[in-house]
Image 1 (cartoon, rainbow, N blue to C red):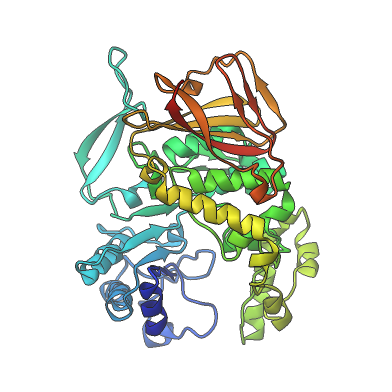
Image 2 (cartoon, rainbow, N blue to C red):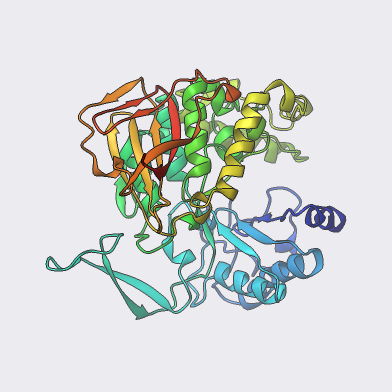
Length: 467
């Protein structure tokens, strides 16, 4: 592992470790044999007994995990952590265990910068707020101009913040899947895949910030105002979401090529921090299903039954039907089917080039590389189309025009965000419709009178001086 990380660093790559501090594995864990204080017996989460982070004799348990984090940073030189399912961690301590682990990891890193990201289904914004501060939201006075996030925030002393750098944004994924596929089962029923959802994601991160969801019939989320968009890690694929389709089918096979290119462009040029799942960048065709090598027969059967219960709503099946449909997770052939075919980098060259070019544009373009600096706003243009305007100084704005639907004519073009900076006109910087990506070469046409949006496309525009 040390050699792997050293080699990655020599290539300019950081390595982040996915750590599971919310439960122990179902097979091979014997800590409870040594002490009754590692687990909380009275309550269970979805994986069994939770870890004792706040009960009697929890001090040594907390120290065990804090020291583990320091170990990975000091001994292996990892560049950060992704904390799995932090919503399942039971801890009412003054200092939340993940915040304590993160601060110890930063101390262990010394002068090195590390990145700490949390998956949190409750969407608790406190995890990325600083220690010692809490934002109390108040309505903006009617006689004052509201700031970009439309609220005034007042600081008050608190110990709520956990000092992390990023949060998983499942809301973006769910909206994207609905927009691309029309799915409406399980948790997808709480999303419309509508243009406003993507605009809100760009401006505010989470869509659910305390509203009710029909899925699990509970409130979800907390306010994220004044949290920068780049804090939110957005994706259209990851290991959980692809496996949750049952067959493990990649998203590009569930929609049209044009819409998939358009969504990929939105993902990689948006102000959030984008994440790609293994092989996504070259259009891998192999599935990704749940697999696990578990020796105990009873544990293996219980896991398979649990997977069937979880996936049945997504597959629109009964639990028994899902049980019969899903493969055994310990089948070696299943693991083999999930392996990447690296030759697809050339077979799917257009899709590979799409990702290469977008990542280069995000890294090198004078405005996109700034992410949210300068401010972002957006507007709905139609039932499947919208724009994001990236403001800047010195007339260096960018306009991202996204259309998941058919060809659209905007006449009159009355949306003010469409207007170029003074003395300028818009010029196409990049388009998903390029033949380089197997696009149809359809061009976006922008005149003062009307705009013509090509079907199923994303186009990035920059201002140039008008003749």
